[in-house]
Length: 572
Ligand code: SRM
Ligand code: SF4
Image (cartoon, rainbow, N blue to C red; front, top):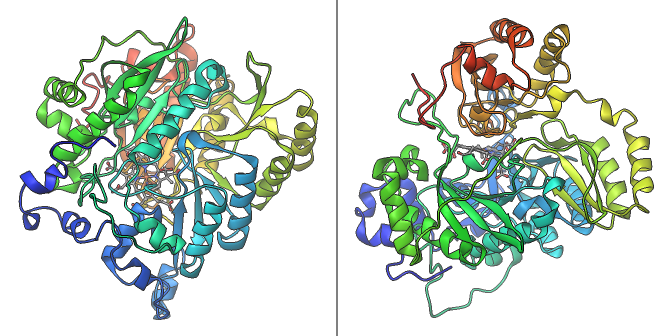
């Protein structure tokens, strides 16, 4: 990244470390993300990594220590330590991988990941159930196919997203390449990852190990995404920094820049809120990297390092004011934004089935219910990977696209699909537009079920829709097991966030393509109330809707919910 005149400003100009959050000290003392991770991996007494600081540092390496929450109580009763295991998140800019990489991921998941892989809401893979001794074999295995897990989590720039929608193919290759370039540019430059996971020797260097991030990295996670209208599949307004591609006669002209999106809320903390990103201007293609540097430098230097609940970029923007932030970004970049160009989004979902792009190539989207690939799906996709000559693209809706298939190859892919999943296209429209986060049993923050419960709830909502003749109506529904919002529930036309086992907050009124937040209509309610509210609202929708009107827009027009006008205020 660009070397700034004042690097590591947060450390130099801000409060002394002991006045900052404990994580700032931890990062500062970590020797650029090394900590004592390598020693902890050798500890044979526990299945965990013994140092709490190392557990946090490992997130910067894409690794989360977890324990099986289904077994917690029983193991406590038996006086055993929790069933520790690790989640490993792969860095996969734009969600694109080759068949060779797929086969390696599949092999590692079967050998070390409990025979499952997860497709995440940010277009990557997660291994779950990995034991401590398997961490290095998995990471070294990924390295063999040029994959890594650098900065898949942690206080840095996370996985960079990019629209996969085949409709956008004219610019897709260019924009996907840009997502990869930005991802490579913004990852930490420390050699700690190579030393710990690949066994590389430490070599003394002359310059700083982190010319951009400095010793304390970002105040909090930072998320970047590239959207190609008319598809907003990546939910660009939920990104800390979103680039919206604008095409011209000659090709890709540049990007509208959106800043300050974020979903996370904390339960019982009204000062935390989801916020949609604000558009601040347009940059031509060749200025994208400079723009990303300038935006990230601003958040690096001004983000809140005392209170982690208030440390995301959205709070920096709301505290300082959007105009001040935009002017500072321009100062950092050394040029001014051009006025934003008009754009139209039509959906944030995926195009299912086969799609053909103007270049004659064909793309098959396969629905994966909420992201987990079990053995049946792994077998099917492995068979495809063995003959496929294009790429795989993971979608932000947790699905897979077998992309770039030639007409000659298509019958062979169809035959594999028919053999493994004869009724593959019978998935309902509601399920196609549903997203759910992991939650139990692996997520340490889950307050209610999500991925394991939503299929049952969807079955009941499907019946309501069928009763009202709405079975073919696309309605976005998103469930998260807690208010953190990993399924981006605050921009679902129906949103549900877990409060306690079996209890959820229910939200209605978001825009169909992610352009408006929803609002809470019921707090801490169970399935009976959820279904009552939806039966009533969907019944009215069937009777009173206007032509072409989406459910979220309808709930606002008829006053079921009040619109969220400010783009961020959400708690009444
Ligand atoms: Fe997330 C924390 C899973 C996308 C907001 N998220 C977590 C952790 C790591 C729990 C933890 O900190 O211990 C979850 C691990 C569960 C597990 O067992 O895998 C977790 N988040 C996920 C994934 C796997 C959900 C999924 O089912 O796909 C997604 C991985 C994405 C990826 O590939 O990088 C995932 N998380 C998101 C998104 C959606 C997005 O980025 O588009 C959000 C909302 C956007 C945002 O960041 O504002 C999101 N996750 C959070 C937050 C709240 C952050 C905040 O600002 O308040 C947390 C908690 C935290 O960071 O303290 C969190
Ligand atoms: Fe876990 Fe909550 Fe994220 Fe779901 S929304 S994966 S429960 S942190």
